[in-house]
Amino acid sequence: MLIKRARFTEPLPSEITPRSLFESRREFMQQLAVGSIAASAMLDSALAQNTAPRSKLAARANPAYFAKDKPTAFADATSYNNFYEFGTDKGDPMLYAGSMKTQPWTVRIDGEVKKPMTLDIDSLLKVAPLEERLYRLRCVEGWSMAIPWVGYSLAELIRKVEPTGNAKFVEFTSLADPKQMPGVGSRVLDWPYVEGLRIDEANHPLALLCVGMYGQTLLNQNGAPVRVVLPWKYGFKSAKSIVRIRFTETQPHTAWNKSAPSEYGFYSNVNPEVDHPRWSQAAERRIGEDGFFAKKRKTLMFNGYPEVAALYTGMDLKKFF
Ligand code: MTE
Image 1 (cartoon, rainbow, N blue to C red):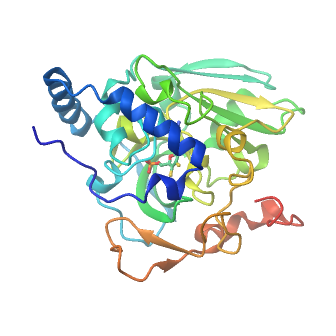
Image 2 (image 1 turned 90 degrees about the vertical axis):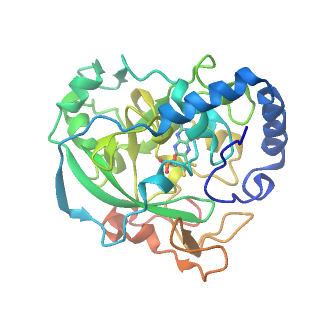
């Protein structure tokens, strides 16, 4: 049987991942290598399910947040993904994320809030009118996309739960269910995937609580049924398939920061002047537009969203990377 591959050749895992993580990935691939006819049939049904159209979402395009960039093709945005719960290859999320059950789904919102609550997706969809926003997303690995996301400002949800005066940070936790997510059995990260923001960052209107893309509900490989999108930060800050949002007084321990603190800081703002220890962040390749031999495009400070600069006044962004 022909096994379909991701649309792009990915950089070597050894180039993008610390050595220890690269080695656990090999172990994970061995676990997956069942090689049976049953596995091929499962793969076929996973592919069919994972590329099927989703429900349409009515959303008004917000011109204030609509980048002039050419939108990345739907096929590219849904086949070249990072979602390590499903494996570390770019094509793994498309192949394996179909096993994730996204209905019913609830998000627990608690911690330093006056009104803790558990919301299902229908209730989350009603918190504020849905908007379509074309945002650039720049991955720390040196590639980027421009995607028409659907959602509303995270600030709308934050207002609803009424944070207490002690709420200084917001922590996002993704689903980590080994029964549905083959990658959660690996030691690639200390699961669950946790990310975090300072509360003023989370309240910036650009921070998007995202429930869809390309006019329909999110595909599993992109973080269904709910994720965040933070276009001025490297892609790994935009946690997918969120099950809990917790308000805290102290800075959250994020999964990437725990695994390699010298490589992944808490802030992780896109910054062409601060290189990752193993590669430059000065330029990027737009998926679907810039071929491997094309000259890379220059990466812009805060990924070209200068309106967030005021959040970091007086901070040394080389130290707080
Ligand atoms: N969220 C979870 N739960 N697990 C992940 O592995 N990968 C991150 C981020 N969110 C990741 C995640 C990274 S590295 C990137 S670049 C973006 O998701 C990719 O989002 P996309 O696949 O929708 O483009």
